[in-house]
Image (cartoon, rainbow, N blue to C red):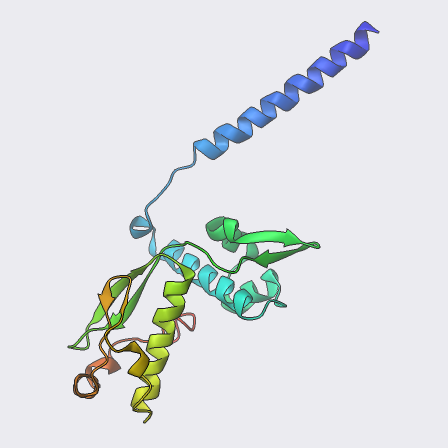
Length: 186
């Protein structure tokens, strides 16, 4: 009888010790600001964000399939954005929205890129829609930017004047509009 009690105590102690170790490992992680991430890690994080966007666009896409299409392992996606996922019926599903930070760029009145520090998936979607509408404007749809007149995204005023946009069209050739949306293809 005494033997059984000793065994129970040992398993209880080892379980408590392993739980404590897990908590310490979580607490001792080094938090690096996004601006100080190495270039390779920053690019991997951006590609992981594209994986999340693809999974939101098509809920039937699996994490491994979306990750493969952007050149990112599922473990990397979960490393940077683990809180955006939950397991449903044995597969990973992405949440409908998030509060992750990402800096995107829009053109200013001179054609220079202006950083837009987005803090939500809604703001990132708005920047994306604005840039798509700029492309529509340059392809001949003069009313494409009407809904953006006088608007701001994350405190940055958007350039919508047709005269200004026609004047900076040549500068936008150097401005890589599509990098943030197609995985870096230029």
